[in-house]
Image 1 (tube, one colour):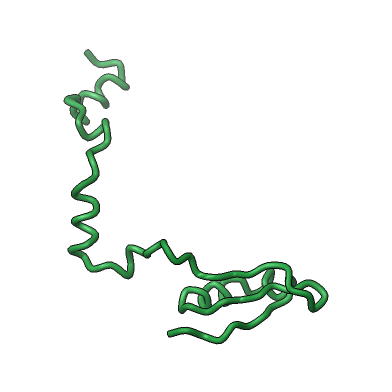
Image 2 (tube, rainbow, N blue to C red):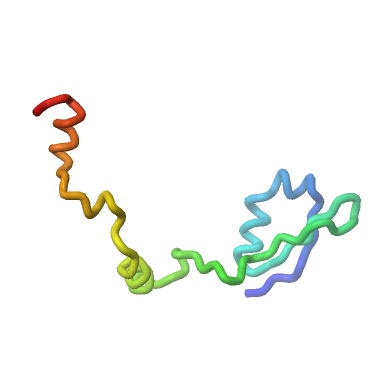
Length: 89
């Protein structure tokens, strides 16, 4: 759904940013003005796809390809870490 481009003053952006972001998330574009002159444009990022918009299978495929972090590969157990932190041998 592509919404028409609209404009908003800097003051409006400061007070209604969440609402303007919602418009942009729906495909709209906001031209930010200062004294009725355009100074910036708030538009959706074309290459970023929100995980919320992906299917659960796509999210699993994405995360399944990522290597586990070093802490996951650790051979030290949680109980050993706690014991070490308490000074227990």
